[in-house]
Length: 319
Length: 57
Image 1 (cartoon, each protein chain N blue to C red):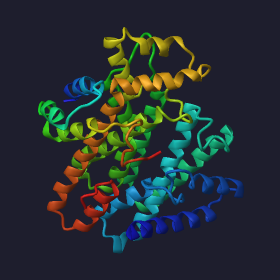
Image 2 (image 1 turned 60 degrees about the vertical axis):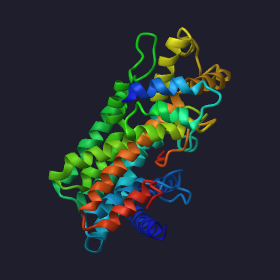
Image 3 (image 1 turned 60 degrees about the horizontal axis):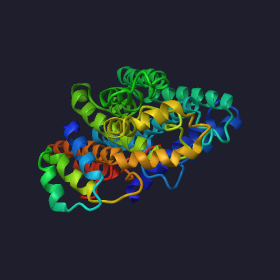
């Protein structure tokens, strides 16, 4: 824990200094600072997983932290800014007006903030990484942007209910690209294939878990917008065989934004189909798979302590 | 792997009481890295999705 706080403090110090010296007006600086205090962000004391620290742990596997600590800290800060930029766009696209972010940042301001965060994040990476690694980051951000566009229409409809396979392909583009981004920023080119497997497993685990949780969150719009998330896809599958498609009928004939009283009934139904259990199991399975690969790699590494730190950070209690 | 797992989850989710032995027997059809997670989750009664360790937002 002490080690985690130490890394976090270094990244926070870098961000404070960087934002204060940035050539942007003070209102924008205040907005960015407030955004970095939101749930799951680096300045929020209650945050467990943060993207900046995730990057710090990955980078530490490949770089000597003594010699290159300033680069690791700076790039970790950049990752925090880049992911925040995509979070803003995500909330705007989902119209999460009751979410933490858009309740106090007007939409036009949010678009500009996302743009600033994206550019500053990329600027920092360009200062510390070689052109190939920089391009790797751009490539994964392109993938995420393309996934974001496709996500707008990735919904349940009478004409088409996406399959589990389509769901995995979609999250691979839209959000798992961000875990790949972190690995592709840090790993040697010749090891990219191996580490991409780990990145994908971590990404799948996180996204499946989020999608299962968000269905029960009144501040999220996945359910009212009929987004084709895994729990909904599986619940519809079960409903087709057991109840003549009651769930699909509800989703395609009711306006859930106007009939919010139906949400508890639909949520309870989804839970009863086993779709949530299925997601919980798959999420844990993918995380375990990533941890197993990491532990195997650790056996032949001379950098064992950093592997242990990363494994602990990802939530393995055995270490 | 996923199809088999999904079929088993649906089979057991309706049951009011499921013994660990019964789950273990059913889970034996799954890959070993999935069956222990299956048994663990299906023996837990939970109102909400389990909080994954990777709670990014």
